[in-house]
Amino acid sequence: MKNLILYNYFRSSTSYRARIALELKKLNYEYYPIHLINNGGEQHSEDYRKLNPMGGIPTLVHDGKVIGQTMAILQYLDDAFPQTQQLFPKDFFEKAKVIQFCENINTDIHPVQNLKVLKYLKKNFSTTEEQNEHWVQHWITEGFHAVEKMAGETSKDYCFGSSVTAADIFLIPQMVTAQRFHTDLSPFPTLNKIYKNCLELEAFKKAHPFRQVDTPEDMRIS
Amino acid sequence: MKNLILYNYFRSSTSYRARIALELKKLNYEYYPIHLINNGGEQHSEDYRKLNPMGGIPTLVHDGKVIGQTMAILQYLDDAFPQTQQLFPKDFFEKAKVIQFCENINTDIHPVQNLKVLKYLKKNFSTTEEQNEHWVQHWITEGFHAVEKMAGETSKDYCFGSSVTAADIFLIPQMVTAQRFHTDLSPFPTLNKIYKNCLELEAFKKAHPFRQVDTPEDMRIS
Image 1 (tube, each protein chain N blue to C red):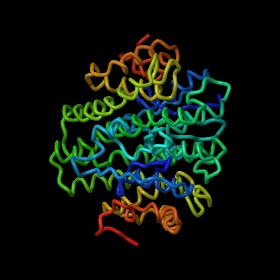
Image 2 (image 1 turned 30 degrees about the vertical axis):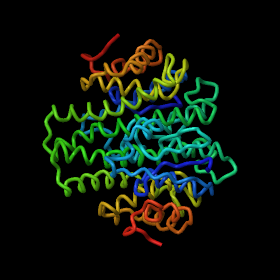
Image 3 (image 1 turned 30 degrees about the horizontal axis):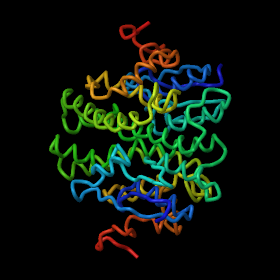
Image 4 (image 1 turned 135 degrees about the vertical axis):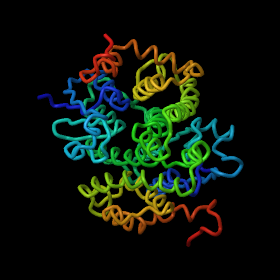
């Protein structure tokens, strides 16, 4: 048994964040799939809620220490494995700017277009698939305009200069979700450039939703 | 002119977080009010968007350095003012657990019940005030069940043991919002205990939404 276990789901963008971090740091981990739809959503099971009361994914377990929420997981991995590639800058103002960038995605974009919110809309306001897709596109587009502006001021190859940071780890999975919901990404040239650069990196490739053990056969890419 | 300026709004729960942090640290700051409703929402003005492209509040400016997002602001204040009361534990696993707690509120509860989401619901799905209130109550109640469980395992006087941490700074403003939307808080005895203990502290009192320069006269408390 490995001393790092990641409870996660191939398609979840928050899971993708944690996998990229682990791959960038070249840390071996056990992949424990939590299916968000089968069995009424395995994240709601009693066993999983013991690990993560919010029922969110991913959850990282390191030598028995249990951590949820990707902002916590990424910062913990930097601290617990200081010899590995660091995801946040050492300078504390630069670090704050990276956290701000991440949180724009983590709070302003992702939660509002999350699966459980879409389910609530459908159930309570009888929204159509099309209305839900517009909802997702709306929050992503609004948020990406701000993120594009921020990246435009700081990006060279990646969100901040020419080194990968946590900002890229939050951005790329959100762009994959944007594509999945047919969001027009043409107004975001800086984000598209960063996406292209990141997807050339081994860590982002290996962590990609379509290359996981729980990726359904018909979605797999090589 | 002070070297710390906080752009914020009396009623915004994220603004309240930043004010509590500044008060706990006994840092003097200039209060710059951004009215979220007047003039179509002052957070949307061109000048404010230059400071904070996402148009979110609060924004902290320290000696010309501009930081948005409360998770970034709180961590920055710990780093920039190491002699003041620290909001995150030094031990990095404990720190990760505090961040996880904060993020459960910051990502799973707050963004979904935010003003801009309620406006979208009303405009696009013609929701009534009552439906919007149920929406807010739903996300707060669901999230608080998880947060209550986490706090039940770690709380003594506050969320983590007997010292105030960032977790309390994220929790209390969310509880004030919960009350405002008439959420039943009786299922959350641990959270209620923490709320009572925090509200006895000078920092939480001084930072309270009803005691700010931009609090309307009829909402003011002494």
